Amino acid sequence: MMNNITMKLQMDELIMQALREDISSEDVTTNAVMKEAVMGEVDLICKEDGIIAGLGVFSRVFELLDENTITELYCKDGDKVQKGQLMGKVKGDIRVLLSGERVALNYLQRMSGIATYTKSVSSLLEGTKTKLLDTRKTTPNMRIFEKYAVTVGGGYNHRYNLSDGVLLKDNHIGAAGSVKKAVEMAREYAPFVRKIEVEVENLQMVREAVEAGADIIMLDNMDTEQMREAIGIIDGRAQTECSGNVTLENAKRLASVGVDFISSGALTHSAPILDISMKNLHAV
Image (cartoon, rainbow, N blue to C red; front, top):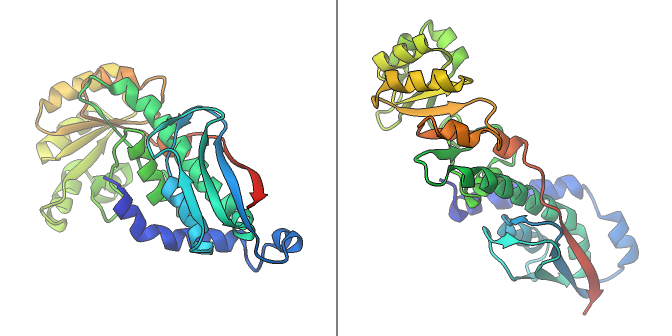
């Protein structure tokens, strides 16, 4: 499960990469209008309702440009925010506020959008045993931030990367020759502390995965009736996960089948940003 500590171990390097992308040599516009350091202040304003996530990343952008920058926040990650709400103020060298604005907002808008969308889906699963999971369908170099945002929105993290667990998908099974052979090879190779998950596309594969001793069986792109049959075949001998085109519109119906987990790539690849802006910059 992603948390603030995990994110802090990686975020400085990733933020610096983003800043270097945006400022390859200098901020020409800012340097043209601000010849020297002038202390200033700017408001952080939410422009639509949602769930806020990434405030620590937002403030860190400015701190990396100038450690003397101060971000004063009036809300915290996970809070519901409303259109027009003043969420905080950033104080420091105006050149820093201008140069860091876009990178800081890119992180905050993206992460808040993911948290907002995740919350809308996870709320549909309240009262069921089913947990909502993300996937590896993340923006390159943004995974640590996007998976954290999922947890802020009430979701859970699937494996973080390819080193994090065994998930035998269709092409792995094809390479091994069969479900049984793929599970046997994974069991032999992987440390005993790792669970083995198998992606299946039909009921015959479900039977093979159960007989092979898979720990988790992922029901991929099955309709509701097929999933019910699959869960009956599995009969508690493995945990169950469903995946494939999981959306806000069908999440509740999928959970009603009784799977342990629902995984959705849409949480990270299709969530719209939350509109947030920095306004009212002035010298102090």
